[in-house]
Image 1 (tube, one colour):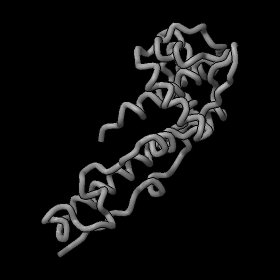
Image 2 (image 1 turned 60 degrees about the horizontal axis):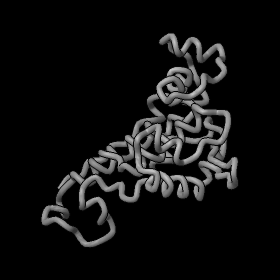
Image 3 (image 1 turned 45 degrees about the vertical axis):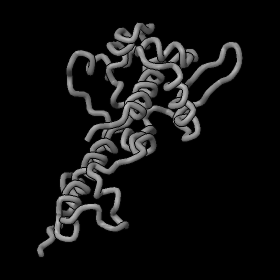
Image 4 (image 1 turned 90 degrees about the horizontal axis):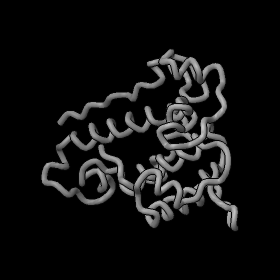
Amino acid sequence: MRLSSYTDYALRLLMYLAVRQEGLPTISEIAQVYGISKNHLMKVAHDLGRGGYIETVRGRNGGLRLGRPAEQIRIGEVVRYTEQDMAIVDCMGALQDAPLCRLSPACTLRSALHEALQAFLAVLDDYTLDGIVRHRRSMASMLGLPQPPVFHSEERAEAGEMVPNSASRPHKPDADRRIPRTRCRG
């Protein structure tokens, strides 16, 4: 599965705001740092604002900030919000409609791909924005931003040490994460 540029830009915008915890960066600033279209990023920011993921502050000293704490923004939720079409193949878009393919009445590929998509999204649901920017100091340096304050767990994470972060990826026993397999015969 390939995510759209729109979703890519949305995730990068959210990551930038999570890394740059102080001040109000502008769309122009963020677009320049990433080397992406300001107009395209403006549409993404508007949509993320409507969804409550970011807040826009108007005026001379205005800019953008996260609409809620990074620990509360699930990556799977953002992907579902920003992706227009999650159908991996054409026939997935026609789950309720007439079959698009001669094989549809007997084919199990559509259900296998649907199961795979659900597993993909379930993994993304395990990650928060806070969890994917846990290396804030390194990321800030790569983005040309001032260094954020350091917390003990971040120092350990920066050093490559595995640091449990229950807020970013909750523990789920394997049995709870498995998607039941169904096989169609016929």
